[in-house]
Length: 480
Image (tube, rainbow, N blue to C red; front, side, top):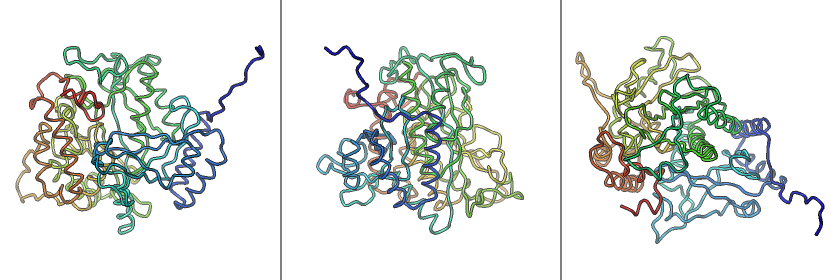
């Protein structure tokens, strides 16, 4: 036997975080300034040249927003990227079993290098659009629907929509805490620390620091990372980007947090209200529109420094709030969060101060003026949410208000069953959502609702957790 020290047999790409951040920020800038064919050529040339890359991770989301990933061997990917297929019948909202095969179209603008300690060495990631067999965009792929609509308003109106999400989550004790949930025991929080008063090196801060480091390496441009109001609650804020990239970042944010928590023996949960009697998790969407590089939501002379365009957008979103609720609050558990006693936005109104309002107007200037949609839950499909919101802004109807009459108080639906009823029969939803996608989405929402008691009550039920669209699997779903 040879006693000499054996050499390392694996030589897969591992990039230091500081270099990784620069590479990904450069890639994002390239995606915003170059033509698709140029970006595609650069990436293909890079993959051919860099021998230490072993796999390309392709991502897409189902109709409910759950992220799916496929790893393609790099050599296979380079030979077959124009003909990638998957079994659509195994993914919610796509094909029936009799017509299962669907295609994936690579979105070269979404290419990113991955941190090896979180995703594995020698991997890069790209998001994809889901296509029918005839290569048309699938109606249930809201990433594709959103891209098409953003291109339409840019071409017709020269308008670019920008967004940034504030996504809250809880850190729970133990791995797979959600799958193993029992209403008699509930969840165990990892710490009692909360807003501003968590110790610098406690487990919550270590999780936040590691997640923030990973997101910066992915080119997120983090702004602030902190504990939230409730015990063991966290929020990591990152800067504005175009709507499509903002949605991709939401998906990556949740994926990164879940993986890092699992590595630490814990669970990062984005359930809207996993524990009663404390604040729940929101996903506040900060939104603005720009034209020729100018923020067209800003008007120095306008009320609250908002332009007429911004006020029209607010008015339309509020007018269509009841029917949009099933998109923005897509689970049984989401309606437990809409409790005004815990800073939750259940009122269909706008305010610069009242945090129980569905829309808030943050302080801003010529560059930062925006509207904040506070009623969105972190388990919503981000692509479907922003597709519905942006389409409402451009195609919705304004709320008609009788002169000299005080507006009546309006509230969001109290539970998912009410939201389903409104969504099902609403003409505006029929206008903005493809019939096939609407039918499939309703099918899954109703099935989840039927697995839980009609009344929420004060106890978080086992059914609303294990049948949740981001948690359930084939075994759990078939236990009903």
